[in-house]
Image (cartoon, rainbow, N blue to C red):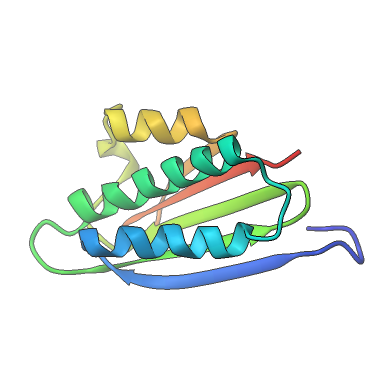
Length: 129
């Protein structure tokens, strides 16, 4: 939570699990970060991590049928928390350390991956100070 009086912004959207949704997610992040003092390099890290998490949904969550995923972001002066959630067939037991998830971990300050029953929940935290 942010201290009383501190700016606090929340954004959440749902997207089709398709490649065309990835630029829309980046636009949402850019809009949320516009007007903040977040440095360019940090913005690139945020975009990279979130795009990779969403790409994993597009590639792996719904192998048989179309699906959707949600992206929620909570911005305070000190942190950005982003959650990517799908209702696909993934589970934490089947996550392999491939390049995409390694990039998510490298570009984020903290990452957690949980079973969403169904699907997966990926939470990424970014320190902004």
